[in-house]
Image 1 (spheres, rainbow, N blue to C red):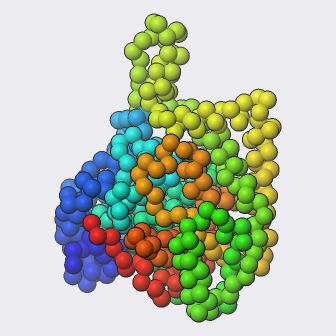
Image 2 (image 1 turned 120 degrees about the vertical axis):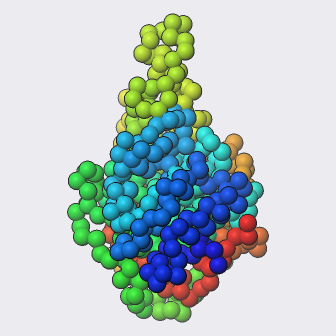
Image 3 (image 1 turned 90 degrees about the vertical axis):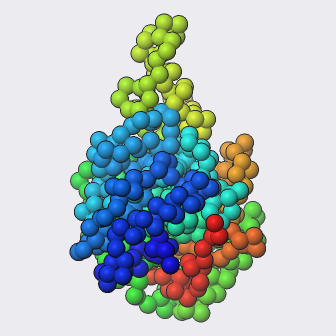
Length: 482
Ligand code: GLN
């Protein structure tokens, strides 16, 4: 079998026993890239295979294996454009902390993956480059915004990848592409060097072919960082050890508000079957209530856009990426016209929509009615979870109400796109960890994802449950026919 089809831990083992060598792994990745990338378009630009070749594997936790990065994670000397024209040509002048940690653990960077512009979206269609396609069905979206990372792993073009998740951007594409994606607890992984979307919600996390790889990669990137004031100084457990724990007697909540109209019947069926499987393995289930769920989408799209409008104010042609300055004289004072032209040409439609929404909800006169109320409801959402976690260890839900949808199907209807996030955004609002893993395929051969939510810093329980489920099912072994 070609080495690019293996998982990270299998490759590390093969390197250790000298059944594989680094040159062959990268050669197989390159071959795969040449074969399928023209169809999938997972990368924002071609990876540098020369740089990745002949990595040093001995004694490295991650075996030296190449990692693909979402195009919003800075790596020193590399283009990092957030799939946006406004960051066109921006070369990161330093490594994000996660990249530094990957390198310290012996990993090399494979390249940058395509994404929704500035991580605004659930389909990878707002990228300024091109839409990424779902490896399981090239007419469908891979999900977003880390759609390129998820598709590259699902298509075996990368061994594993990092993404970022503000409202579901790791978990939803993981679900739609049939891979494993973890959004860690807010503060578990440093955000230093992640180009900010909404700073109170963003987290970086791993997208992998199975649960073991996910735990391995999180081991490498988690931990306190004095360069990110929101990172939390709590020791990082060995997540690999949590895979061996027992799930007998684990108490799992099923929120009644999540099984609603609009959920695809095949998704519901797959989740019900996953629950039966987990029951047979000894987990205990009970129905729980998260009564403020119905406000989550509205609250998220106020808070996230407010923070985005402020974070994106820095892209004005002065310091980063694109500068457009063609009609200085007619357009008024020079500096102002440069701002306007750069931002007008640099941002795509969805980014502009978010900047306008965010500016509106923060403007005087509306601030109290929208932003400040949204913060209060955010607290209520968080309290719903606190209550449930007093009597449960984990919560189980679908990751996405539907499997992958057709390219173009939701682009003219932002509201229907925003509703794709219904099961994922509460987790970000409450700062919790959550993972998506494959739990089925539809009649048409599209992956379905199961979401496991944990207590703050409860990643170990999540991995434990996910691993036991995975080891007793076959879903993670299924591959798209490309
Ligand atoms: N789909 C959500 C949005 O468009 C989440 C994006 C994300 O997590 N970056 O905001």
